Length: 480
Ligand code: ADP
Ligand code: ZN
Ligand code: MG
Image (cartoon, rainbow, N blue to C red):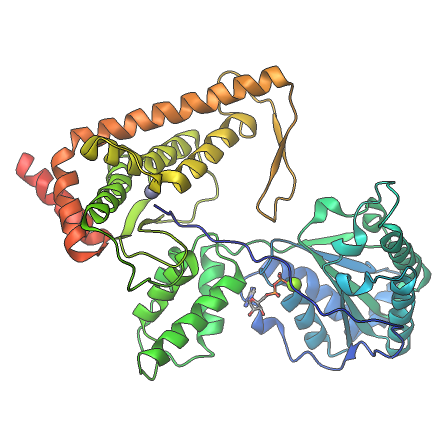
């Protein structure tokens, strides 16, 4: 019922500290991290290498009269290694690293945040060359919206930060790095030249990046021989570096739990599922009737996927319930990394999402709540087709929605009239209806396979994509 999906990490909790900040010394002499600890992210490393070089030999830049950017802003979704990269820059440059999180500036008492900023830059100036790293800068650097009340403190802090950034001489060797996952919310004053004028995107890793990250973290645990990291990387499209690090750690924990001395392929595979869907609920009691419905539902997804040429291939189907609440799921894995999705791809995907419910309707003549998650996803995709991707005939290439926080879940807001919104709903509904009808058609054309595969899945609870295809191909061979 759940397709592959990775949640985002939410904000980090932090203890509140009171009083004046002068007692606190921000410097942390060595981060102990280097670029070798950051896998993938080659473009980001390249951009930062220049800053490292500048910290090594500022004269070289001063001689020619070049001014390096005072600040660089690392921008990307949570868990992609922004904090890690900043630490690696300090490690590579071998300079002191002043690190503070934006939320630490924002205190209950007006004026404390600004004093902290002054402090921080005062200390940094003494230790130059050095790096000042402001993590989660959006907490102080939010756009000033002119509203009063509650934001006074933040505004003062931000103003102080701007003043400090303008005040010091860039050639002294204080480099300011900052990280955020909400770049659209930053005050434009922060982004103007002479401040954070260099923007370094730190995106979710691609296939090669994921494999590299798995290797870096894999090197820290005992692995059995012949681990296929590329298979794990293929199964984790959309995962961040932090999630991949977590997968390796989960695998190590699982190996210990089962009394083995090293991490095997199956540990890694299982922990991918733990991260996607939670732990197995071994003693969940599910009635035979419900199990049957779940099995048909999942095979419904898988069959619709298999019968459409634009779908990613089925990797695994399971009806073992998980702690996330998923009662089963069908994992699809693309052979190759995809960067674009065509209209046909999206429509095929929506069909696959409706395939679970379609199987319930076709075989049991009923529908269950199990499709709730599928419905949500299908609707999101169909809506995006109409409002953002210009894929519906009716509205051509008109943008009808804007994405607010693209690194944090990507909530959207409508930018069209109420009449248009009503028409959008109609279009979305049409797309889903058509996809649903197609799924029903595919399943009723392959009813026999649906029965056989569902029975097979009921017997085994988990089947691989190869087993799935073997049964499909056998049937096809008989038909010829
Ligand atoms: P961010 O600051 O972007 O939210 P972090 O730098 O805090 O992410 O990353 C959290 C953890 O995830 C890191 O400590 C590291 O273990 C792992 N990680 C993230 N990205 C990478 C990467 N590119 N290479 C290796 N490990 C990574
Ligand atoms: Zn489903
Ligand atoms: Mg961070």
